[in-house]
Structure formats: structure tokens, C-alpha cells
Image (cartoon, rainbow, N blue to C red; front, side):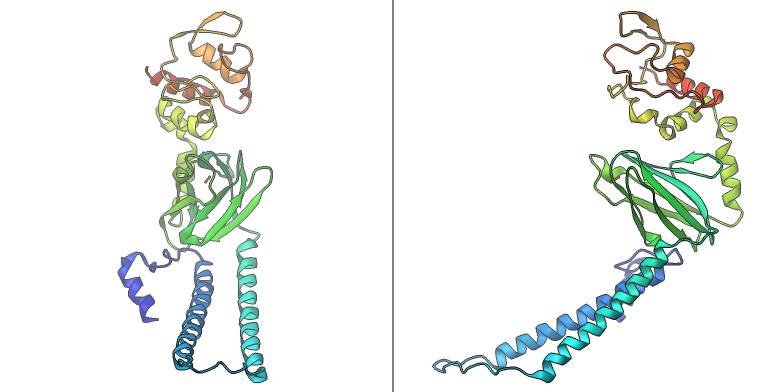
Length: 324
Ligand code: CUA
């Protein structure tokens, strides 16, 4: 085990090893234990078999001019031994693996629930009060259940520090759970190749100290009242799905770009010209099919009832702030 300890020292004070990130959830130690159990068994048998093979090749090589004798029939004791020992080992490995899998799969009933959406190419986390954030904040020492689905293709939520990885699939819900053991920021990855910006599909899980989580959630949920409207709008742009179709860099997507559109006169399907002001933007959010910009399909869903007036105002202020 000294090799492993050496690697842990080399990895610094993060608490992780050369092979593994730090263990920050209640299930991490069990996952790592099974990993090392299988690792050392594999290493032991690899060295034993390759070592014996090399030794036998040298020791019993056929000298020049000697004819090969017929091979001996078989050795019952040897064959039973090398069948029974691996059989016992794989049964033990199956038992430990299956037990660990069921523990990871079955969340405690009282777990705090967060809804997770994967989409090209970001994660959204929705809390019980409806607030949506781009990062996952959780309280320390509390079991958290993630109920996950995808808007488009298959993604996979991966939190190495928690040893949690679960596919996020369109058209169904998958679940994962963990109980974080230490406050801090940890990385979230997407572990399923999902297209061009797969490697940018990153987020943080922020494990909050006792009491801080509730404070954070209350503050974050009130961002409409505490942030400048344009800033709040920038946040809504990312968390409410605008970014899927409307760019902010001038490129055309499924819908027109938001960049510099405010104050412009735009030609609609049918030839009418419309000055883009607050009221046109508001109408486009609530009844997007009424006046569609020429060159685009009328595919935008209505946000009537899905966005509060305050939120619509914030988004309009954000669009105004995006100058050409
Ligand atoms: Cu989402 Cu890769």
C-alpha cells in the first residue's frame, strides 16, 4: 500500500490520491474500497501469471536437437484450484459491487430534492421553491436526491468528488443521490459525448456550511429584487431557455440574435416593418406567433404565464443593454 500512500502525498493536500479525487460524499469511501480491492487482486494475479509464465518459458525451453514429448493429460488438483479460487473471487466482487450499486441507486426517503435538466450545453438546477441556478448548491451532511431529465440528447451528470455518475436521458427521469461531507466547491462534468461543446458542459457543486444553504437559496431566489434588471435579465436569458435560440454575439440561430436588436426597425413575415421597442419585445415573449421576423420559422413557444412581469422586464432590459 506504500505506493498508494506515496501517490496521495504527491497529489497534495486535496485528500485525493493519484487515482482518485478527494472523497466528499458518504458513498465515496465504499466505491474507492471496491476499486482498490479489484485493483490489487488484478495486480496480484497479473504478476503471478505473467511471472510464472516467463519463468516456465525460460526454465522448460526446448534445447536444440531435442524432440517434443507428448503433453501430459491433465492435473485434476491444479485445474480445480484455478477454477474454484477465481469463482469465489468473482462471487465476492459481484456481491460487493451489487450491494454498492444498490446503495448508490436507492436514495433515502427524506432526501432534499433538486430537479436537474441537461441540455446542449449546460446544466440547470431547480430548487423546491422554483428557483433555477446554473450551479448546484447543496447543504452539507444532508442527503440530496437529483431527479434528472434532458431537453435534447443523452448527457451524463458526473461529480467525481462524490463518486456520482448517472446518465440524463430525454423522455425519462433518472435519479442520483449523495450526501456531501465537506463544504467547498467541486467540479461537475458531462460524461456523455453530446456534441460540439460537450467539454464545456461544466458546472460547480457548492456544498454550503450548515445554515448557509438556506441563506443562499433565499438570497439567490430574490435576485429580481436585488440585482439591476439587466443583470437579472442576463441570468434569466441563460436559465429560462432564451439562449437556446437567440445568440448575443450577432449570429443567427433558430431565432434572431438579441445583439443590437433594440431600437432597430425589422421586417416581419408579410412585409410589415416594426420598430423593436419594449412593447414589441413583450409581445414577442407572450405571443411570439403574432409578429414573426422575416426569415425565421414561427417556432417559439409562448412564455405567457411562465414568466412573471418582473422577469419579462428584466429580459427586455438585458436585450436593451446588448449594443450593436
Ligand atoms: Cu452533455 Cu456531454
